[in-house]
Length: 328
Image (cartoon, rainbow, N blue to C red; front, side, top):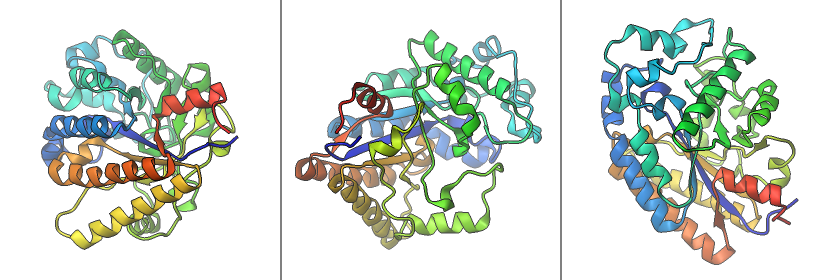
């Protein structure tokens, strides 16, 4: 099974504070969180202008209006992580004030869904850590069922999933298929990107990943449909995490952009999928610089669209192509 042209796809881990709650305080990350709405609108404008289709993997909690709405609809089962601070449920119970702007986003979700080519996917319900000790498959099932339910309440059918912290658990994949999740974003095949059961990555992995953002350490990390369609749910592995921009080191930014462009070009020439991802809150502290960097990437996609017929699909659309046999 082969593609007849290269594909550029993007998936975003849309999580607001739920995704970094166990790592930083709101005050430590306030600037990033406050900048999310503007960054999201800027991304949507760019995606619309360049015809780029994106999967927004959304934490289920974001579909609720506020804390009262969330509390009234909590699932019966909670994850029993060995490290209790990883669970958001004690945080919900212990905090009288859960700032709506940093925890909930039904209006943002509606704005995203209103732009052509934007898919609302799942980032689990509670930002669930599938490789952490203490949690169980039954608890994961309850979490995903809750995510599916609240999305349906808002008029969305979840078909694509991104595992929080990229903690892909192969034991849970059959369950996803049973629940109607047709695809997920897997990890790059290189060993430095394999998931661990801890929140803090090993130092040597983190150093190599950082270097790989600027220099060709792991290769282009693009994939053919024969890899993605090997089993259900389909695996559309990540190619590159789009790191936040830095105005301090412009020469490093040039290296990072060249790294991404070269990998995109390789994917276009070899009829492969190039899969970029990041979190919207990564853009929040400096949306101007981050959106400008993204714009350069999307302009390169336009070049490849003309020169090599490269196309853009979100993860759900890639599933449709596989299932319809419109490849090869």
